[in-house]
Every structure is written in C-alpha cells, then in structure tokens.
Length: 354
Image 1 (cartoon, one colour):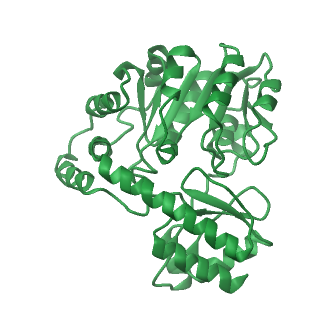
Image 2 (tube, one colour):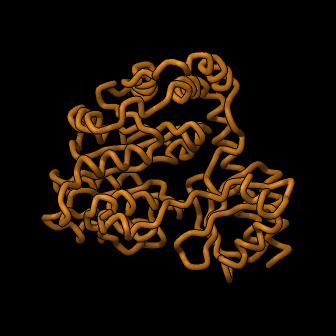
Image 3 (cartoon, helix red, strand yellow):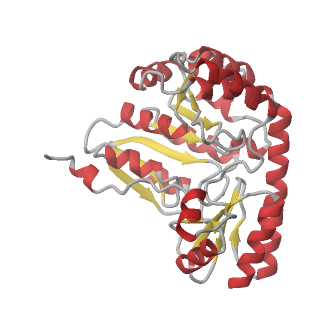
C-alpha cells in the first residue's frame, strides 16, 4: 500500500501534554498545565448556561451553514455574513486555505522560521514547497518574505501576535507589507491572539483594500473554548465561497456554535480574561527577571523563556507537576499564562531546579 511521499515525511502535530497523561505516568494528584495557551479562567457563566441547554439537542445535526454564529460574528465585527467561513478551530480554516490555493508540487508557501506548526504541516501534507524565511528578533522579517516571493508563490502565512514567540508587528508595517505583495498571492493574517491586544481592529478595514487577504481568528484562546474547536475566517465573499465549497459538512458542532454565540455576547467575561492575562504576563516577566532569565516580551497569552537546558528542565518541571511547552527555538520553553496561584507555584518550582 503506497502513501504520498509528502505524508511519510511529516511528524504528527504534538499538542501540550494532557494533565491526565502526566497524572497516569507519575501518579501525581495535582498537575498545572501551562503548555497550550488556554484560558485559565475557563468558561463564562452565560456560555456554560447556553451549552447546558444545547446538550439536549445533540441528537440533531448542527446547522451546516452556522447561520446564528455567522450572524453573531457579523454583528460583533460589523462585517458581512457572506465574508465569514467557520472552521473546527482555526487550524481547520488554515488547512482549508492551503487546499484551496496550493494545487501543484511546485507551488510555494512562505512563512517565518518561528511560526505556528500548522503552516508547515498544511503545506507539506499537500506536497507543496515550504519557503521558510529567517526570523528577525524572533518575529517575522517582512522584507525577507517579500524577497522570497517567486512566480510559484501561492500563499503567505503571518501570525500576529506570533506563536510561539509572542512578537507583534505594528499595523502600519503590516499594511505596507500587504501593499507590496502581488495581488495574485493570498496572504493569511492569523490573529488567534488578537483579543489580548485590546486594540482597534484596523485589519478588518484592510479586507476592503486587499482582495487577497484572509484573516483567521479563534474562540479557543481569550474566549476559553479550546475544547470545543471553533474558529473562523474573514475575507471577501468570493474567497469565502471557495472555502465553503471544500470544508467538511457540519464541521462545527452544535454545542460549539451555541457556545461561541454566547461567548460573543459575554464581553464582561472577555474583559476579565484579558485583564487576568495582562496581570499574568507581568507576574511571569517579573518572576523571570528575579531569576535572571531572558525571555521574549509577549503580546499573547504566553511567554517563551530561555534556559540552559530546555529538554532537561522540561522533564524536571513535569516531575514537579508543571507542564510547559518545548519549542523550536534552542533552549526556550513556552509558558502559558495561568492563574496567579498557578504562576506562583510554577515560579517556585522553576527556582528550585535552576
């Protein structure tokens, strides 16, 4: 039985180690997970109540077009419903985009050296060419990306804020970059962590300016719905139509759709989540400063910190019941923002093994 060569060369996506897995392995009762950039506050009350009601309807298929959720997103962001594509998490959307625009083995996809792992996975799974540009100060080097463009370039992925580095590109810099990218090349602006910026939503205006722009967002982070998998894309209606042609039927389940609508209506919980994240970033940064550790200033809900021996330290932290995330930058560990108590415990554990 033959399998595509491009698939054979891939390694499966490895998420943050589950709490239950570490408990089974080491017999630990208390485990703190700071590995997957999840919302430590959990669900808002409105969302929980909506989900509880939705459970009684799971014998029915969900709305395959996601009418109510698209309507809620459209009203929240003041965008046309026709511009929205729903996904089983934003990962699903990223893969849909790759399938839509990468058609031949010689097609090229550009992304940064330190970027979300789904970009190379989606590219290589299609047998296309990954063009990886060197990072600049751990973030995107947009000039290098422009220089990497060839007649085979089909897609450019940019995460802002970036994962796993937490770096941020200024709106003006991004807009200038978009104006220099040929209109035949699709640019994906991955804004999974946008809500943590608490900033004006200028990127939405760019959709009217650049027909080749797709913005992706998620309910997994600030909205706290990681376990339900709900993401969406914003684009012109033509692109949205193409993406909707190839997405799986019922790709966003009923409970997830209901929860996302409720989460959008509960802005007070979002404010609490963003405030807790801001405080957590400050607490971690101050803790690293006291320990004499270098770290990358972050605009997301995690910080990547530099240590002497990341693989060893990762294992030592696991033994103490703290799950963080090894990343591709040598001797860096990515630490998600937890509650104040969780961060204090982590910093105490880290100090004990340094």
